[in-house]
Image (cartoon, rainbow, N blue to C red; front, side, top):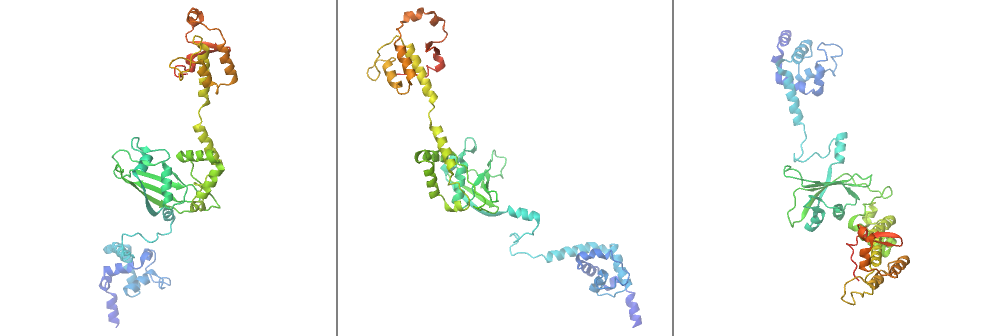
Length: 409
């Protein structure tokens, strides 16, 4: 028995194990394989314990626990003999690949990403759902200018109505759209625009994409990608889109007809309750907004009073300067063409104030002057521009644009 043990101890380490067996045993230690170099190969009270790395490795190889075996394994590992470290890394890579759990379809993404900060930031902006909106050819033509290659004013109102019809409740505000120019960028979309909810606590965003330029007389299909989480609380914050364009003119006209309070009552009655519950008050303007829209409509439709003032001044100049013709009948009564004092008095009698009327009648009572007298008058010969004096004021005809204003009786 003693001779057998002595012979077994004299055997080389490679006669008892192979390189592959050693590599597999070291790879099975995992991350603890780095401790093999730190722990001594000598036997002592610490290395004889079960948590010793060398003791665990020798047990996996089913070898004797002695210093000779420890020294042989220590020299092989620390000195990198027989490419042992390369074989160990290869075994670890194969083990990790075999232990990887795969889904039924490898093309599908993982059901849930690790909860790290970058992944959490990306998941907040991940695409949650996709939908599509369709514009007819006339709608696209009213929103996009093919001549100038840009969007027309107030195109956002049309896209907002399309998003609302899809069931979205956010009072969105649109950013400047991107429209592809030229033919170099083949992979870029023809149209791309971003919209976000104007409520601060809501993180929902919309991306509207049109891949190719639409053909003539064809409908336009847009892809809408929705990201972020919808968060609307009417008790915290409400918002609304601006009243602009044709809608502002129509609302202003209606406010002037039935009053701002009547328009407000009708809008509240016809408003979408789901939008109001989400804090979107776009369809229900405030009283101040309706009053301002009514004022803007009156200002837009108001005829400038300065035009009538200029007409009165020109009429006075004509009547004061016309001293040669008297008692000319109206053109509607006769076929004569010429200035008519009676008709002028009838036309401007409703708009000329009393001082102006008095000055007109006063100019008629002045003595008539013939053409010979006007030609002999030195002031008329030296005056560079035709002029007349009324109530102490000198009126020159070109100043009041008499050539552009023709009065026919």
